[in-house]
Amino acid sequence: MVARAYTVAFEGIEARLVEVQCAIAPGLPSFAIVGLPDKAVSEARDRVRAALDSLAIALPTKRVVINLSPADLPKEGSHFDLPIALAVLAALDILPHDAVEGALALGELSLDGKLMPVIGALPAAMAAADSDRMLVCPQACGAEAAWVDAAQVIAPPDLAAVIQHFTGQKPLSPAQAGEVTDGPPARDLSEVKGQERAKRALEIAAAGRHHLMMVGTPGSGKSMLAQRLPGILPHLTPAEALETSMIHSLAGLLDEGGISRVRPFQEPHHTASMAAIVGGGKGAKPGQISLAHNGVLFMDEFPEFARPVLETLRQPIETGDVVIARANAHVRYPCRFLLVAAANPCKCGYLPDPARACARVPDCGTDYLGRISGPLMDRFDLRVEVPPVELGDLEGPSDGESTATVAARVAAARAVQSARFKDHADVRVNADASGALLDEIAVLDAESRALLSGAADRLGLSARGYHRVLRVARTIADLAGAQDIRKPHLAEALSFRLTARV
Image 1 (cartoon, rainbow, N blue to C red):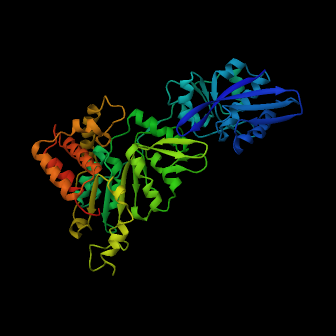
Image 2 (image 1 turned 30 degrees about the horizontal axis):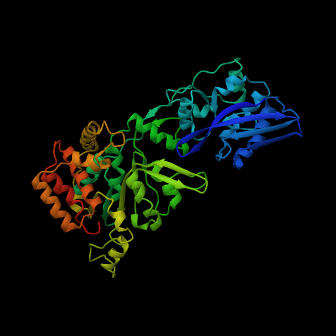
Image 3 (image 1 turned 180 degrees about the vertical axis):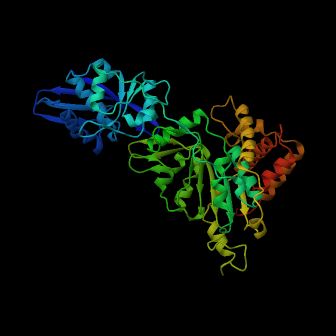
């Protein structure tokens, strides 16, 4: 008789149901695992055998075959240990078949039977709820998995506790969800002295999730500004927090099962590889752009990133997801992020200062920023120069607006957009609007349309650039509490696209 247990295999953030079948038949003693297992799954036979030995459970001197179905789906990771052990125990009639089949299990076994934490407990809990099964996971993963209200989650510390639960000797209580955290205190925007135009661009970017490019000399405050962006963004909604946490769960980044309401802020180094930025490598893991989903991706020294890495950003910026293609699978991750890029104006960094610039002025600036292709630059809604801070501003008091003040305006603008797009599931902010929806929300009067038409001709705006100006103008109007876009809103939106190479 074939015993069955259930687990999942991960394809991006999707957890696909896997049936673990165990058959014990006469023949030479062996323990085989089939169904496209990777090395970690194949080694499960030794961990399972040792864990059962620690409980004084001996495998029969027969042929044990484990099949992971569907057999053509690649199986990766150590979380297959526990479902394999459950299938074996059911085949030995130690555990009731119906109880094992009614559960979805994942967990790594140590040689003494303890359950070690694994990644992906949150997506697995979603799969368990969808298949109307109870989730069994390691104790360290219980707080994470319990965030899925529709799933019943038990989190035993070891295999012995699993056996006692399924046999009714010592039933386990359901796991409790981890804490909701607000993260560390945000850095205050008032600490940035001067740079009022850059602060305004930061506010607009936060309100409508518009991509921002900052160009300025070294030490002008570009990184300082970017690091204060999370503080003016509204907290994640429950749906957004779950989306983001599922990705972080697969990356093993959830701390003790807690879920943060603060939007993620990723700042990869410019030496990062393409796989690190967009995802890939062994198991096609999520990259920085997916870890920044619903948050901020800050790329400092933007032209220093490898050209192929920069060009791969073009499609995710437009679609909000990334597909990692491999010979045997295509994995899709969401990546709806706010891109903030910072760059020096040239290699030496002092192009605007004749006293400090190198001898290659102005060619050094053209060559350096020329590493950013036109199509990629066209995707930045806001482009702002960040000049050196005047000495008088540095010596003066910090009298700029605080993070709380700006955050309140941003939250009010986001609330307007939430109400505006409540009937559009795929649209959350102005940056997502396109086509007929954009025409509906960005109606221009005759004076504004004449301004935009003239500016489009003079600036040589592409169709993408034209629509991005409309989206930014809509956000500026929302920040002002205006029902319609007026000429000042449109003029300010256009001002952020005036500089030729910024």
